[in-house]
Amino acid sequence: MQSGRKNDPVNPKGFRAGSAPEEAQDDSLVKASGEHGLDENMVREMGYQFVDMIVEYWKGLEGRRVYGPLSPVGLDEMFEEPLPEHGEPLADVLQECRTQVFPNTMAIGSRRYFGMMNPAPMPVAVFADALASAMNQNVASWRHAPSGTAIEKRVIRWLCDLFGLPDTSFGTLASGGSLSNITALKLAINKALGRDLSQVENLAGPGSEISKLIFYVSSQGHYSFDKAVDVLGLGRGQLRKIPQDDIFRVDLKALEQCIQDDINAGLKPACIIGIAGNTNTGSIDKLDKLAEIAKNYNCWFHVDAAYGGAVVLSEMYGLMLRGIDQADSITVDPHKWFYMPFSAGGILVRDGDFLRRSFLVHPEYYMEKVLSEEDTPEKDSRSFHQGDKVNFFQYGVQGSRRLNALKLWMTFKMVGRKQYAAWVEKDIELARIMAARMRRQDDFRILGPNTLGICNFRWEPKRPDGVKDYSATEIDSLNRELQEMVENEGDTWFSYTILNGQVALRVNVENRMMEQSDIERLVLVIRRTANRILARKE
Image (cartoon, rainbow, N blue to C red; front, side, top):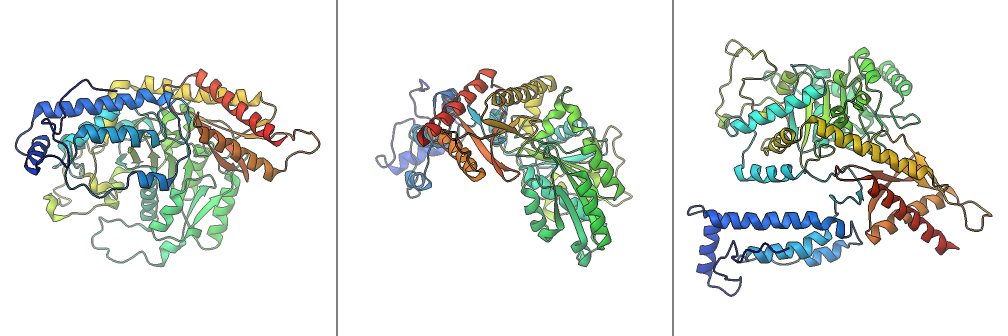
């Protein structure tokens, strides 16, 4: 797609790298960078070209391969070149992006992409990201990003209210669910040991008590919890993987038995983790029951709602998350089912002041006054921290922080809860239609509950001669072959996973633009591919 604009925005004189005098090239680059004053026309032309490229990319998604056979070696060779000594015209760099980058990406926004929790991003959020980059605010301290801090506080308040948390709740945006889950386990440790960073007089380590802390999560829990126990200096054995029930939720009886066994062994249960939409199947643990168990054993109750948290927007499906309002902390990832571009994760904490105390530091170069208890101003009665200068570096691991709240704030204001709810409800309905279509296929079996936007199924064909069935191992191989053939041909894309030791094909619907016709087309592709595989084995 051509923009129709003749002037090169970086080099309006038409000089090209390697052919023009260095002084001329440097002069044009200085103008483009605005070092000697902003050239408005040049910046606008540059922006127009980038907008044209974005629209070209989006418009081209449905006419290209979703994914195809790629080689790391080939891609490395394609981009192999020394660091340029002199700059090139923007038009040349954009053309390289068009011919080398675009064709070798996963077509995430395509209506034929049914992969992981990567949504087609909202256009307003994409451009809000550019605006955030232009302002380049560091939302670490209020002084460096006054309005940015206020916007993040407002977004956090919206999210806390959506999940039914009290006015004392607060939180912080993060890079994603992994960092949020690590933060939650750190809070659980602090609560169990009665310590936090605000206790400046407590310079001793946690001693042997930390080795007695035990954390409980379903066997379907996210891999970030394995990382978390390692990052936090715990032993891998301190994370108990509790068996799942028949629809891939944590087995409550097995959980309580494990807790009792640990108490009898002199260990200390510290944290119970509930999953609100696991990655494999979208199953949601019985959060209300887990909240009761956590209360009975004085455990921190964390809910990983990175994927399924978005159903709280829907009055129709919101009850799936019954009990989430009792959580001590909640992981939420708007860059999943809120259709945000990466990155936009976050953690919400019932006791917002405890979150702050757990990460409270006072670097001298932030020029903030450290208040005594007598000097601490009375909190605004509207909700936690309203009217206060919040420094978000004191609420989590991250120091330098991007203004990720801007895209959330702008998109929420433009879209509204009801439209969000309609999109989420449609995605769930399309996943259920997918399951219904696969049930009509005699040689496919549905696996998993299909609770949210995920449909799991397994191809279990009969041998063409009808004499002997395929073994479980052979069926695993056939399912992998089916997925790989579809992937290599590039017509559509879905993944496979392992459920109860068996290979299962996994389709995830997370695209507000998708329609039932896209589901029907996917079923047809799967059917035709399966038939071709069987025909080759005759």
